[in-house]
Length: 443
Image 1 (cartoon, rainbow, N blue to C red):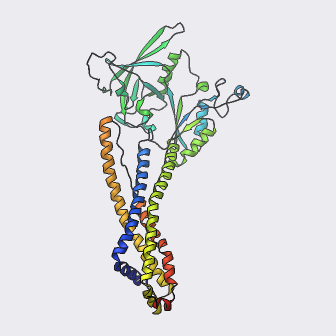
Image 2 (cartoon, rainbow, N blue to C red; image 1 turned 90 degrees about the vertical axis):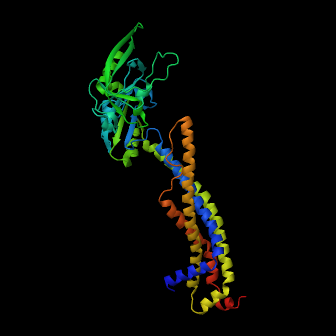
Image 3 (spheres, rainbow, N blue to C red; image 1 turned 120 degrees about the vertical axis):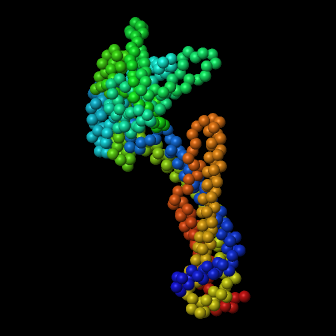
């Protein structure tokens, strides 16, 4: 039998029993729609979780901190290995210049950027407004090398200048407000001079103050990361302020730096580079590791949600098997006649398997359309609810409650067709093995 004739006969047979086929296909529609909606919901939750994860903005960066480890007294006395130096009995492996050089030669490392906090108490003033500042020194002349962008101004650092994060202006407040005075609006700091008052105390408890002027040359775009609350300055200036506060020079070969940003050549090698840094005794954190954990969790969630929807398809499969079995009983003499005029067991098997797969395909197609529409409705309802909640209590809006990936409709359609095919396997085999003489005599 030619393929065209086979398809034509299958469509004719399905058309003869439109009501029964439709009722059977409804079960497949419900099961397929459940799979599409539930998996889309899991994908949407994963998308929202990864997009709103705090600080995830550069998948090639690795934050490296000094390593804290327990060491035996003999090891402490012997000093640090691998380029780091242990401080006293603390077991800390510091990020010294030698340690940084050791990290630089790891395969896959593109760039290392030193970060160091200012070790001094500070009060920040702009006019009558006061604030606090988290000043960070970096060994860069342009913050663009860190992947940071300026919302206004520039990202270049020169002597006496500072580039501030997007949240810094919001920290300014009036320390002496009048009764009933409204909250102060965040000031426009661009191209303005800030008065930074550094404070230290002598050994006899006397307070010593030092006032420096810092010109704001740039305000960074919001990153939802650590950069939003930082004020960036040249590393040399920050080191000088810290040494003034301490009253002594900082020996980087012993104390190292606060932390290091390591840029990998490609996101695919980030985890391997981080593992090598950890193996050296330092603490390496990367957004990739957080994302992998989140993606693994939501992959399991997608499988569970998809399995719940597949239960409905299993029920529909029983309905398809029942429909095909009843069809064989009604068409036994027809099967016998087909075999008498030359149809082979393979032809009969193909016809009934095709009919079962056709029911699965029709139901799957309807389920995909219904599931896609239900996901769209769910998005509208959920986003409307989240918008009302955000207007009352603040907070951001998710991009979507459910997200249907391109592969899901195709997968659901193929899966429903295969379920239909497998459901009709036993009835088709039964039809194919009927003896023509007995089939023709069947009443």
